Image (cartoon, rainbow, N blue to C red; front, side, top):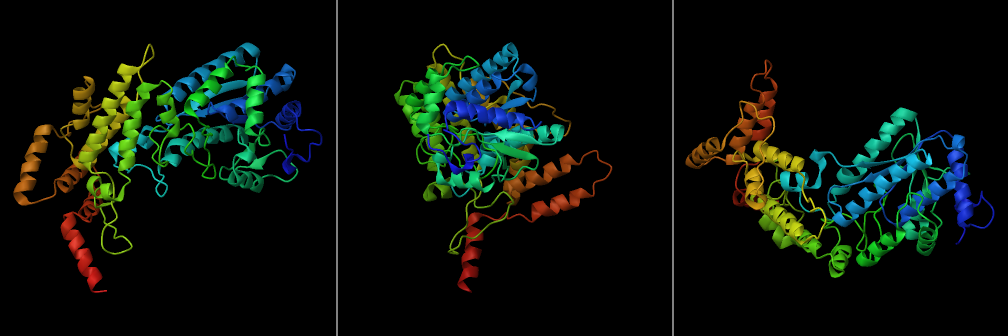
Length: 473
């Protein structure tokens, strides 16, 4: 192991024993609780295992400061990894109680309104790309930060323990060095007030990590050979717990979200399929289907010419419009393909629980958005679930002013007869419905004005006006 300058305050050879002693010094230096980011991969496993082993050597009365093991589930993680992490968190909690360790494991998930499918299928957000990576903050950063902020509110300050290594990338090494407190073991968190960062394995190489994980017994009883097998099957690295925008997102060869379209190909998923996990192939097909929509020619077909605000944006060349969210009919196709993939994957797994690719709460939220924004009073989400999966879902908390499918048919005919936008009339009616029974209805005027200010003309008419304006410049 090469000794970096950041450890100069701790002379001597950088051995595993020395690193464990460094952990004990850091733990005993103050009363701030620790939050350990745990993703289930080799680096976070190494960090947690090193901390556990180091603190187990302390007398019981010296290890009273709480340690929270925090795992983040985006709800679109590769199912194999989710199962592995869930099992590990159960083992950690059980072993901590048995061994009298001040450790508890927790898993955070995004709020349903921020979930991947609610944003993509519900609101029409396009598949993430390098230029529009809307998913990281909603799915990873916000849930983890909410947990950390709760601990800061409870204790005043916390220490985030991250299994990151300087050798993993030059960018990561620079970020770690930038926030290091002079002469100390900790760094300031780049964005969270009251949070500090400790990186116990920053000096290790990949080989060092595997040596430690495989040569020392897991304190919570995990079989790290299973972890190694999983890496071999996926030919993968790991996605760290993401708590700020400086943490790099997963690359081509990492475990991560199975829907990720930021990378050209999901090599980890493809490797798993090649190594016998055939039931993941339907998921890979859905991911590739979404990735195809990033093609410029495909964008024109599947995406609306308006932004979600209802306005249009001209591209830099001035000869066209920047596409907005997915069209409703395409979102319906995505939902159908997703449910079919879930059904097919369930038929291919052997003696294991079937994977859940989209949760019931997400389906309810998507239907709510479609009704409110697109006038989908026929509840086509529930119809699709019934047709594909044979399950009956009903909308929760329906009030007396909800519109029905027959209302939708009447509105559609009226709009066709008078050449009006069905979506515009749906939004106006929903605005009126939302203020029914309120004593003060002053907000309805602003709401109606904002709806009418949207671009309701057809794409060809809008584009013709744009081209005409450009010709006069």
